Length: 311
Image 1 (cartoon, rainbow, N blue to C red):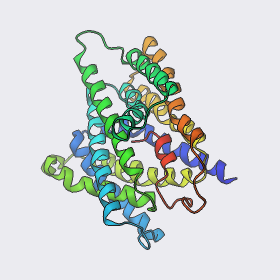
Image 2 (image 1 turned 30 degrees about the vertical axis):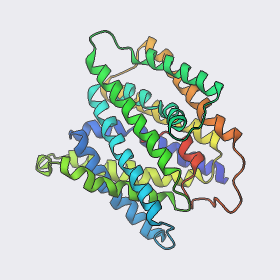
Image 3 (image 1 turned 30 degrees about the horizontal axis):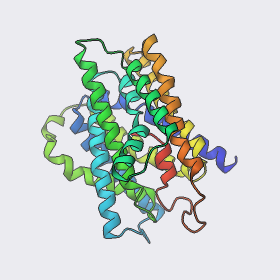
Image 4 (image 1 turned 120 degrees about the vertical axis):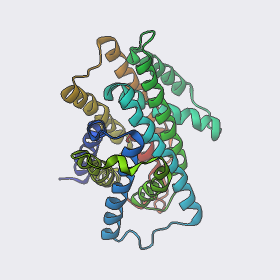
């Protein structure tokens, strides 16, 4: 098997796991803050054990500035999870996941606002197409406050994810596994004040779902993703990333009987196509990185971060 084929299998597996995340969240029976707290707790244990076993703590490359940036990115990513999981409660997993995939557009808008990066006409056109797709896929009727709240929470989660991406792109020369470890570690003291550990007593199988979120959807999933990023070109990463919403919609239908209606379905390809166009355009325009700047697996790849929409 060639490295690219192996990377394809790894990233497809990671995105498939990501697509089942919503089921684990709902089945745990815990509130969004509890779910994220235990996800970061068990995820930190899993990522820490992997990094230790691989010797990543030697020559880690973390400086106080890089550590601070990684921690700031962690703040955004942790509350991104909180709002996404609250969106699952307010609406369906399918709808929340599709809306959440407006991340690339918020990344373009935030780059324009914060970094003075002027969007191209093509990007603005695709942003308009994505907005049209969002209107269609929402399928919200007047008075349907539950779905409106869910859409709003998913959009807020997408904004926070885009902010995390902007910050994390500035952390170079550090293995992405260690950046992810810092980010989940930040979530432990951050969410502890919002977590009532007494509520988790006697939840039975709920603990298994929570452990799965940390070990499978944080530890294993991120290891697979970062291994794949080193082997794949950005266009393939961008395409495979949309395995996530596809699996999420199938899982939502298979487990809970939720499905997107005909009118809503018309908006899905608009969001997907616009997301691909916005994601791939910068990659085609970018100059090749210097040979010494990005050895596989040693730094968080900006192209990989930009291309993949994951939770």
